[in-house]
Structures are given as structure tokens and as C-alpha cells.
Amino acid sequence: MSTTFNPYKAPKSDYTEAHSELHQYELATIWQRILARVIDELLLLFTFVVFLVFIGIGAFIVGAFPLFDIWLDDEFTLFTFNLFDLDIWIDIIVLNGLFLMLNGVLLHRYGQTIGKMLLKIKMVDADTHALVPLRRIFVLRYLIWSIPSLFMTGVSIAIGVVDLLFGLRKNRRTLHDLTANTIVIKDSNY
Image 1 (tube, one colour):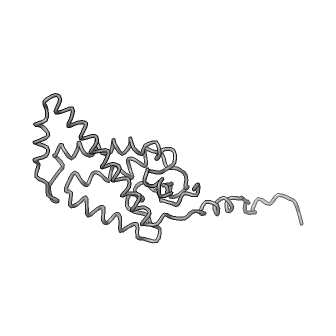
Image 2 (tube, one colour):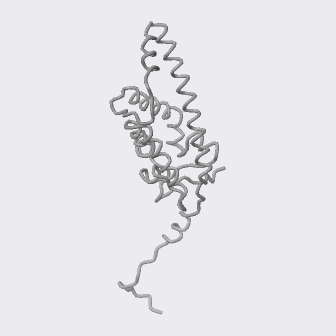
Image 3 (tube, helix red, strand yellow):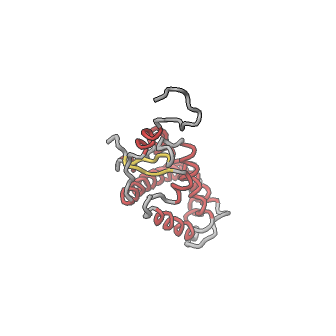
């Protein structure tokens, strides 16, 4: 066998070994994802109610409580056009801010929300399986999915159902996974 250099020989790499290690993960089940979302939404709802109680107490103290009567008297239907409704904009800003307060550090450090941490699942990049930057997670996975509620609540609910149905596919990627290029896997650290 000759040891001379052959310029036409294909280069050798250990990439195949690294690539095979990359696919050693297990996708989270749709039920784990739904339960994690329910936990996150209940925690967010509780935090929002506490926030509103403090705002209400503050408004009562300064005598601005009649403003809440206007807000509570708004008619609500599933097909109300909400684009110019200031309450919806405030809800989106406040709810997303509270979501970041509850989950921002966990998302940044571990790719998990409180619900995902309790169920031992996490979000990773679909291509590299590395943690996803917080900005990409928050904007592409959460914030832009608040936009449909600006138009009609019924449309927002329909999009949520379609998003959930996407999670029933073999790769279990929902619409918000596709926009942020993420997958949800079982966390092997537990």
C-alpha cells in the first residue's frame, strides 16, 4: 500500500460519530406538552389576578376606581374586532411581561418554563439541539402568537387549535415550534 498523497481521495472526518450522537433524544409527548402549557397558563393567570388586585387596590387608594368599571363593562364576544382595543394591547403587554418575569431566566438557562421543568421536558433548537436564545424563543415562539388576539378572539382560538393539531404529527412540531425552529424533548438531566 502506498502512503503517497492522493488529491482525489475523499477526506475523512469524524462528523458521522458526532452526528449520530446528535439524534439521541426522545421527543416529548403531546400530553406532556399540553399539561406543561396548562400549568404555565394557570401560573400566569394566578400572577395576573394578583397583579390586577394590586392595581385595583392602588386605583382605589388614589380614587381612580371608576376606570375599572369602564374596563369591566366592555362587551366581549368571540368575533369582536380587537385591533383598536387598548385593553387587548395592554393585556398582551402585561401578560407577556408577566410571562417573562415567571419564565425568562428558566427559558434562558435551561430552555424550560415552570411547567416544562415540572414535567422534565425542554425546548431546543431543531437543527443543533442546543439551547435557543431567549430573544428568539420569546419573540418567535410566544409574542407573535399573541397577535391573532388583536383581530378576533375566535380566530385566535381557531389558530390555537390548529397549532395543537400540528403537534399530533410524527415529528410533534407545532406551528410555534416551526416559527422558532424548535423541538420539545424529554430532558435527560432528570
